[in-house]
Length: 630
Image (cartoon, rainbow, N blue to C red; front, side):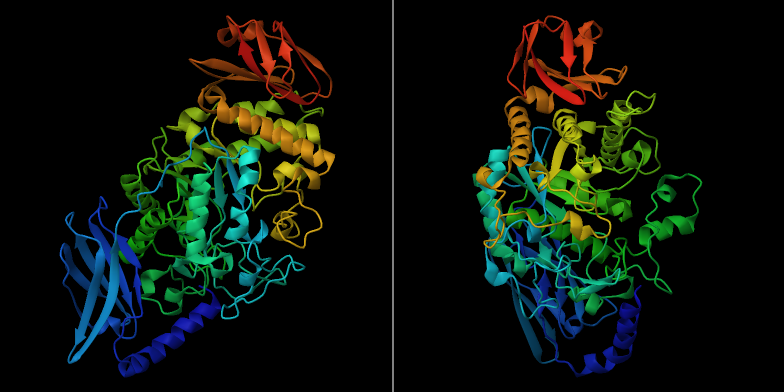
């Protein structure tokens, strides 16, 4: 653990008995903050917190609600109440009554009806996800940029490491922009409260604007607008036909989380004699020869010193996290669940959590972040066909393997390695050729960059031909495509020297911005060309299920030329790539299995009709998308 937390816990251990004895019992917090009637699982465990809350004897008298067990733990400020809620229970206010001697403490806790609005709709290959960082996207309410009572009251757009003031109201005002672009789902980096102090990283003081250090699971960050703003955003997105992806974090919390400041028990966190960081190595998890200590360091080591690592083998921790996931979907109506640092979590816990979400919301899609570099390790964390001793039930995952293949291949496009045995388009072909390891490869989420990686345009050397080729692959191959905000307007940069360089503000998201890239008039010619390119492909795949959900057949690349097809009973779309630096002629007789019966084609990107498709003329460094016609 961090030295700060170590001394905090030591001091608490010394002072707690004296402080606790002097405190009159009280209940200051109950999590979940409320629950719902009619859930498929009738059980819920309440975390009850307050001075000496664990010394009370509890009763609940409410029709259809039964207190089956009350548990105490090491810290007398906590009690855990197991409730069973009958199918006959009605919405209403439940009184939680705690007694100690002559003292009676009462806390009202509410049972609500289930939200009848759309929720848990899932995302599929028919969707196109747009990933944005709320603090850096658009500012709709400058009044919430700074909150003096929070640990980090700073907001300064001139400082790349501070909060910049973007919020959910600003994002809601740009829903029309996303609709015009062809987006069908929005994924925000986490929106939960991050009441974190500034941290010193690499010699610079940085805020938790990214959202990955939770300090209260039941509160949306006030600087983003709070719970009401998130509910409003989801409702507005749904009304516009957009789905919403929640970014979840189970592995760790912020060092300022209220339950870290007063731990329920030592085993709530992964504890070490001295601070131990994860190795960030995935190999010990799947390596049949790995040592126990290597596995333990990977899984139980802390991600960074200011993000305490939760012990999900602790049943109270597990229940807390699972119930929060269910509460979130039911309360806000989100449709899919992206899970941060998936591979660092206890995997049996993850299976349990995934199963709980899918039980209540069968259509919800769950895809986690496991930043691995090979197909075997990636398959381990999703439903797979490999004889691993542990079998994951995660439906999908972020496809780092295909991202790596696309980027490596694109770097070689137009060069001497474009036609190498394992180079250029061969890299993408070979990555997809291993899809047989997955139960459902089409449920993997594909991408070219994100908030932790170099921006895509910079990765391909700002070569617009490579940029368009990569986006063509992203929007036409198997999987659920996700694009990082600003890619469509040619935002660029590298994460070295800092992540802030790939998390710059979207120009036009703030009233004082001199340029507004949310409008065609505010974009230059190159930016409009990129925007229109993405919009054309995204709109086509949205209106043509063959491209978005048809089967995939690919042919071995030859001489730098790579062809694959998306097809179903209603049609066939061909994608042909010339990765060389010279125009090329592609005979199509080899593709007769998929092209038989088709005599012409329409170029999806240009609208041009080709009356003869026996051979295709492919410009240098170009991928064409052809709708085959009879």
